[in-house]
Image (cartoon, rainbow, N blue to C red; front, side):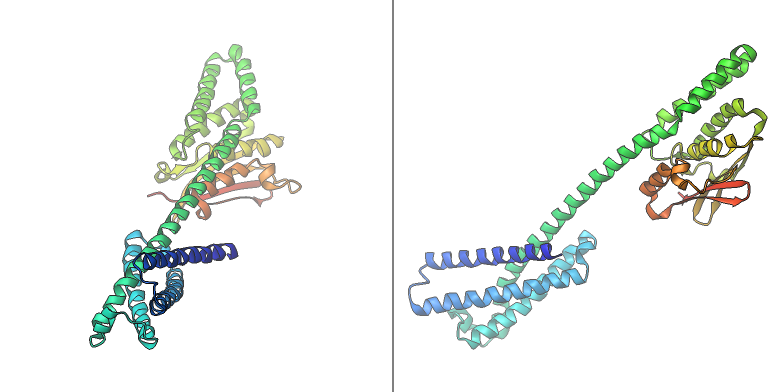
Length: 355
């Protein structure tokens, strides 16, 4: 804040200082500094004008900040810009002419207008309007450029975060152990059940293809994500056989809702890895999709217990899920994982409904 204010006063000093030097240069060029009377006239008027200019331009800035003008739409900014410039030009002219008259610094033309106060004030308004218009124009352009630069930096920073996040999520999309386990299961089925082995190859190919195709997508329809999950669970069923039970409770109206790609698959994979695989008798994985008010709710429930000795996000490899939701939806999305009873763990995601 201090730096911003110091820079503002530096600009004020440079701007009005430059105006003073230019005015003196023109006065000298037109031989208006030859007599003591001319010197008093030029420097007296110039000093009063500059002091008023600094005071009123500072008050204009305070008004602009107080009404939050820089955050309004561009059309409104331009309208207020003209109104504020005109208002302070009238105020400046009224004060300026009164001070000049008090110190007997009016020029010949202004003396002629003494009988007509409207013309006298109008002549001052024009001068103040020109200079305040330039001052406001520079002020607004400066803030517009600063804001645009900040937005560009924020965009670059966001793109960098997205790329970093993409790398993390792409790596997390398909667990290498899952691929190796699937290939081993397929190899074992080649002689025992060739048809099932061919189906398994197709299912694994579908998962890998979907993972690659969705790398650059922010969202995919839930129906597409469910297809990946079904292929994934079909492959896991080769390993767990009767130990793995799967249930779906899907509201059909949610099938077209966009969801982050491979997010639900990550939740299901963690349910298998940290839940079902640790149970001697296996267990249940249930996938739920429903509307809840203005939110689309995705739930994955699995048999198992949360490990209290290990942080939830780290233990379940779900930090990428939290990061992706935050990046896509900000504070409008939520994610939690909890133990809902002695033998059931629930991962719940809420994202805004897309109309």
